[in-house]
Image 1 (cartoon, rainbow, N blue to C red):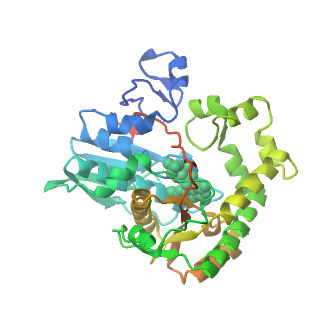
Image 2 (cartoon, rainbow, N blue to C red; image 1 turned 90 degrees about the vertical axis):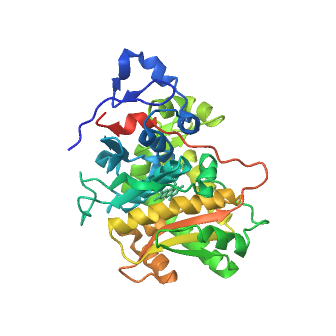
Image 3 (cartoon, helix red, strand yellow; image 1 turned 180 degrees about the vertical axis):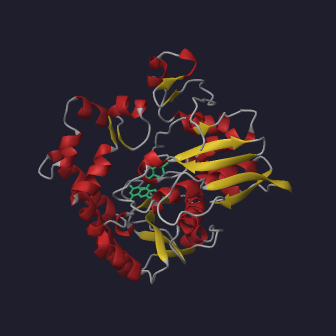
Length: 388
Ligand SMILES: Cc1cc2nc3c(=O)[nH]c(=O)nc-3n(C[C@H](O)[C@H](O)[C@H](O)COP(=O)(O)O)c2cc1C
């Protein structure tokens, strides 16, 4: 089992790892770190180790509730093992660790694309010590090693990595994506998943209803919603000290947090204005959806989830390159008991009969003129590297 050590390789030279300060720096220095700094650090990273440089991109991968569940252990000079941080799972809404594994798969793909952009080909061995039959465990999720003698070919998709976002915003219904655009996004998958795009108006309406139904079930389930509430980072100070989870911050919001208008208790209580505002925002946002995108795999093991994550990252980059925005709406795919009916409805509608699985479901469209999806916070890449 790998041991945890305090490591920091990011350009800013500051780190806090699980409460331990590197190099005796004052805590204030960490608190001042821009929660979005990782987005600038990846392209600027000049670390001598190519794996550290590639991993500084990998931490920018999409992942559920922004838990950033990855840990990298460097082995020798040209190999690394990717582990799941088992403390960063979502036991209520992701009881099988399927979504967490998708996030890890997305990080694997971004690692490979970053290495390829420098001319290195990476061999990915999924679950080299065996695929867990149940949930994730302490065994590695992937071995990442330099291909013997093989030069990597840069993939044009990588150029979209700095601008990729999960856009939690209403989309422009007057400018839906074209069938050709959706086809081009879907064709970016390379790892054997089946990608389904939905543009037909009657189908889109049915999916709007299904996703809204599922969202309300999750928001109304105390355990499932409680998991989200516990992961909320309210206001800049909380986001800065813990740059993961569901961050509620920015101009306007920071003031509402400081004034006690936005609180965890308020987001938990259906009669509270904060809860009602959340419901209204989601209802309008989910209704403003011109098209959907789904990723399916022929089976449902964690191996397939990892593969789905790799393709999910590629679809995200292809959409970004095409000027389209993506927003996952995962509620109907979740395996907790209260979600059984929407789960069945979603799988049936997509023709996914067990053991086939719908791994991702997302809204896709264009942002209205002037709307911008901001980059989300990240822990520094160096704080997630083990064994140095
Ligand atoms: C498996 C998976 C499931 C996700 N499900 C949702 C979801 O249901 N709702 C949502 O708003 N975002 C969802 N997301 C997006 C994450 O919240 C997002 O990736 C994370 O906050 C980091 O933000 P970024 O993708 O903009 O970098 C999901 C992402 C992944 C990989």
